[in-house]
Length: 361
Image (cartoon, rainbow, N blue to C red; front, side, top):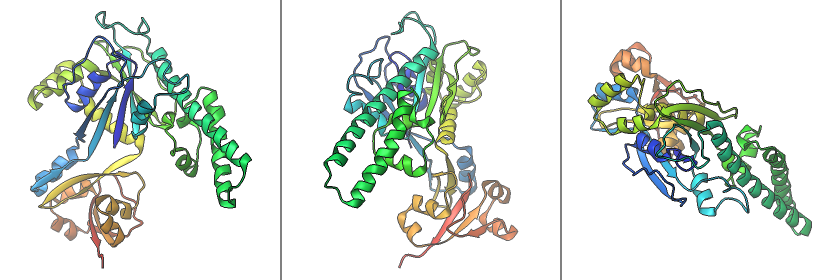
């Protein structure tokens, strides 16, 4: 799972990146305006995996992972005049979701590019730029499709494909012209597959992070868009927390009245937003967490582990996490009858522990 961190200059993007990744990238009180990318891969904290490790004492533990990409270079006007720079657009488009950092803190040593603190305005500025970028892409593609269809020479199948694409983009165009992101537009799964061929960034799910100062009760705007979630984080506090030992971090959390580290909250929100969940494989050799879309069948879980397991799928030996903890061993789970055999159409549940039986001839 890849998540791109975006935001206006001096919003505290890199501070949030450091907080989420335990990074030590230097933060500055000025913006270079250049396209810069910082990348880090972090383990997904999951107390369920920790509990399974205690049960099985494996030689190896593998967490699910999230890649965070801190993307600098966004500002007012980037979506206008021919659209977003190709390199910048590519960096944003390759992510599964976006984490939009919005400044909501006062700091006289860090001047705001808009000369005042206004989270609602800043949120709207970057939303608008992404929408304008998408509108430019859609308009240019529609022009090319119109020219291609007018010229003729396409086979009947090609013409059908072009007309289908044109119809979908004509549905997107007025929505974007109205200043609305594509994630708000009701598109079928088939239509989404078509538009995903383009770098349409307003289609991506977004977690809006309001980077607050010491005022934890600050009144903040809510995103009214679909596939959007909002959360407030004390960026500097979270960054300090990320550099501490686990013991010091626990004391720090208690002192500041923080329920959990920002990383945990962000990953949970990201899973919720993207509609994914965790399942586990266990044993003496390895305990491992995997990521799978909510509602996916057991054969897809097998494929996430290895394509051969999906190809030769026979059955999935399945037990719910809570039952596994209650039983303590797989032998006890079999004895109690809570370890089940499921077929390839079985819908995997969050926290399921799977052992795939397969045969590849």
